[in-house]
Amino acid sequence: MNNRKLLNIELGRVSAEEYRNLPDSGIVVVLDNIRSAHNVGSAFRSSDSFKVDKVVLCGICAVPPSAEIHKSALGAENSVEWEHFDDTADAVRRLKQDGYVLVSVEQTENSVKLDEFVPDPCARYALVFGNEVAGVGQDVVDASDFSLEIPQYGTKHSLNVSVSVGIVLWHIVSRR
Image (tube, rainbow, N blue to C red):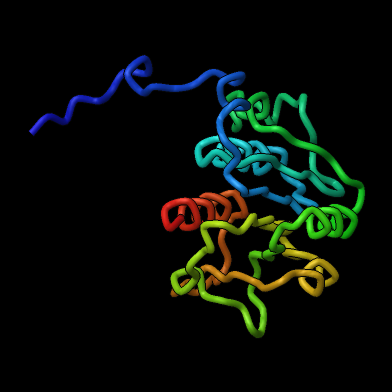
């Protein structure tokens, strides 16, 4: 059994330009007032890994260029397209008009458990991840087509938003 670590040059990485020319995934990540630039950077990095089409930064989110974003994004802020909206409600309204299924990643009364969610391979999804303390704003939850909840079994029932981004993106991409 060969357990040699692969070298970076063996990973088949594409350039930022090649990334932008890959086919669209039909997935957009929306960050609703994420206060930590490190969390924003981590969301960019996960978005790059799973070929997200765009990261939509809303409200108080830090925006590139930012040394703090770059520290955790490792350059993914240069490959993944992004835009900023002052108000998350405006962003999600436009995404819905553009035909996206709006999904709040949040614990709600009627949320769908992530492990039970089977994504439609033809649908375009806008996944909204909320503030580290307050979560997704209620107005955005109300505008969503549905909510997805990551099942949790410990005492906290809370994950860091950047961890949630990675888990949800892996689930959706691996099942499409």
